[in-house]
Image 1 (cartoon, one colour):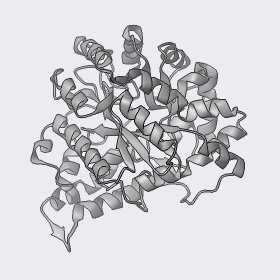
Image 2 (spheres, helix red, strand yellow):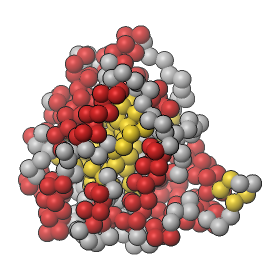
Image 3 (cartoon, rainbow, N blue to C red):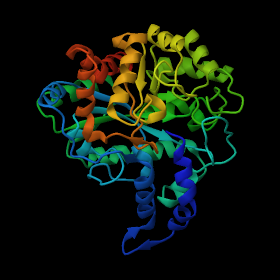
Image 4 (cartoon, rainbow, N blue to C red):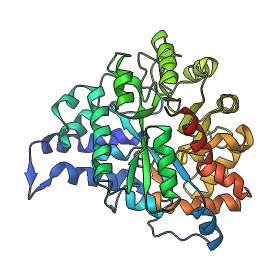
Length: 397
């Protein structure tokens, strides 16, 4: 999630907290406040409907598009409905040909979060929990917040009439892909965690998160945790002893290690210890544009060496520009560094970022990759084939 989430919640924190106890005309004030925040922060540079060339549309229809990161669960929207704000909902995923998206749980975001230095003493997600009337347990427990968001996704899937599937296992993935081969009017999601603070300080809680369906986890988000340093933390250290144990347990449980927000030292430690593929779900590469979170060449290549994947983000700090061509150029740069089998998409949709298009505009990226000179096979790999390969190998049977 991008840095501006906390600025957005700061603006509305009072309103959100107050709205926990009030409903006006049957409409929760928290929903109104969340909508105002989203219109300001989860923006697109141009609204759909989007138009790609016939060549791009034809190719895009043959792809299985996978997006490795979106923060859509945090905002309280019913994702089964089409919304005029935000980036992701089921209708727009289907319209954009997105077969699978990772929906992330951010369980604590510090006040005044920035890209350089944050600690864990403050939290804005509490305001969201109060404002959206999450269960009381979520007010103080980050684990409970993750479980609540997982339950919300399951409830939406249950109400979707088959339009939305939650992927937890290889069998789920295989069955879903078989259905989608004959019905492109469906989509799917799998769950991810941003920051191991969601464990509430107990490694055994990983089993609870796995049971709830979480299949990807990052050891730190905006601040250092008991498990690792964050690129935006105070100490920015590497894996701790607990972090090493966490990595081992994750690999045994079929949970992907995501180093998107990790400190450079943590990434190096993970890469030296991992025996399964490592993912940077939503990031950038410094060869395309500079940035605290963007990966240097050696780490891009080292992630590829694990069999892993670098997911290129769609916001300007990650890709170096505010149009679809910048995303495509960043993808091509990553391909040149890591090889075409180790690059994917990590939009950061609904992560308090501005993007060139919402989920329905994914064919525009296919068109831009054609213009960059990638072959149809290379585009198929980057747009989702690589992510499917890694998920197929890592998900529990």
